[in-house]
Amino acid sequence: MTVLADTGAVYALIDRSDAWHERVVAWWSAGRRPAVLLPEIILPEVCYLLATRIGSRAENAFVRAIVRGEFELELLEEEDIRRAAALMAAYESLPLRFVDAAITAMAERLESTALLTTDRRHFSVIRPRHAEGFDLLP
Image 1 (cartoon, rainbow, N blue to C red):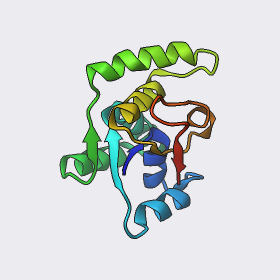
Image 2 (tube, one colour):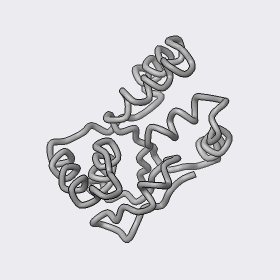
Image 3 (cartoon, helix red, strand yellow):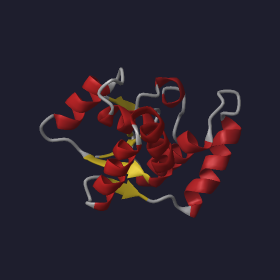
Image 4 (cartoon, rainbow, N blue to C red):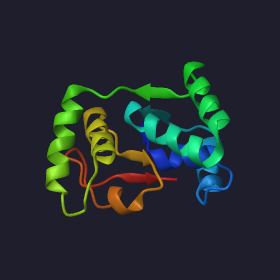
């Protein structure tokens, strides 16, 4: 099983003062867990949050961790962008924004139902085309 990580969960993993920190760290640290992929689309959001809330050292450390291979990236594909546009239109009243729509499209492409996320508002409502819903972790 593959797990896609959302911005909030990755940020919570790093920021000890985040309300979700303990839950995300406990899940991340638990024995055997499935592969976790960071959608490349979340990197600017995570870096922005780290830089503005913790500082540039935290942002730099995160980028260096990616370079060292501590996080595995899932690249955004052209088909993901097309599907994200369709999802944004379908969930316009939510409203569903591009990053969450792109993560959903990636999950559909990878046939993954597991999302590591703090965003219960959007991802609990979205119905991916390959499943009845997402398994929201932690």
